[in-house]
Image (cartoon, rainbow, N blue to C red; front, top):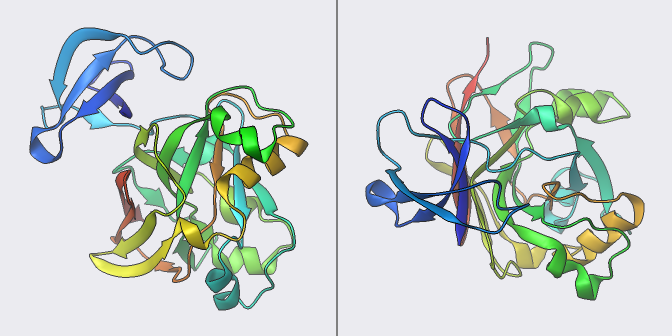
Length: 260
């Protein structure tokens, strides 16, 4: 099941996605499916109808928790050690944008890079959950891009500016429920050229462990998001680039890059 959030020039609504490509349809549902049972309204909207625009499928209620250096090859390319425990940081919910929204390069950075990732969307209040019980608290999965001002990250001890600026957390195109996320390919393309490629099976810390570990420190609320780390191949984004993050079984998140 794929759940999208969209607008057609009015308030955002939620829908189930049926079909693929130009023939895909949005089956409109009532309310937010993270909090309410899925109930179709009877209305159907073609994804390619005039005025239809997909939005970020979730705006985290309180936080985005991201995991650094969760792929060995990425840690090696950054010339840093793989952490013994998950290395966590936050991205504010104001950093979230949706499909086709522009990533705006901040004027105070000269090198912004892509980091394509699988994102976990939390579906229940989660505190001190065990790894064995963690997946029962997951609503679904989506694509994410942990956009990073790399020069700022290297010059400052805290990563708040480097990874939390406005537009630095694209999410989408929808949330997929009931997905086995143990071995999914993660691919990033810039202007059609492949930059990153890996599999979630290569994570140092798997998803059940990450959900459990995060919940020991922070109560996770429905709609919160965990970014699970990026494979090797991160690289620069410049004005007019188009970056795509594709996760097997989920879809493709596409965003243009803009420097104002």
